[in-house]
Image (cartoon, rainbow, N blue to C red):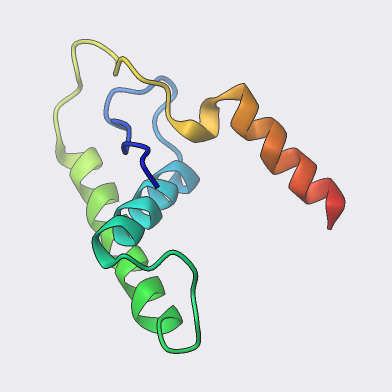
Length: 92
């Protein structure tokens, strides 16, 4: 949980809904200290993720375009992360 949340504004192509939700989920995990969901944490955690996702989506839509793209590639666009996701999907 040491990773930083990467900038989503100014990506080409624009940040996807999945990337925005992943950043929101990481933020909520960090501030709440909840690493794995239980019956008592699932509903408030997921509600917070939905709220942060919606707020982030609005924020990105309302901000003016960036002059330069972010320096860091979001995790969901990194080949090693995509490979892990594909490996998990093929194991299910």
